[in-house]
Amino acid sequence: MRIVVDLDLCQGHAVCQAEAPEVFTVPKRGKVEILLDQPSGAHRAAVGDAVTYCPTRALSIVDDSGPDDR
Image 1: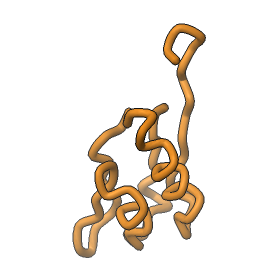
Image 2 (image 1 turned 30 degrees about the vertical axis):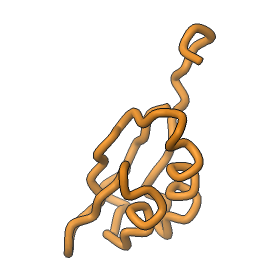
Image 3 (image 1 turned 90 degrees about the vertical axis):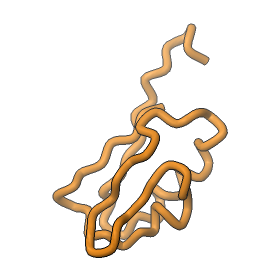
């Protein structure tokens, strides 16, 4: 799993940080910063929630795991 952010869409609402603070941070008056661009499977649910609830749809998940990466 890899996280992709579109900084042109991000408006710094920090919903992602609220959902997955180990993975995302949003500085005051800033845009999202990804702390773990390839988080472990343990973070999958929280990252999924961050992507789902992002008000501007600036986040997405790319699943590049192959058959041997699971």
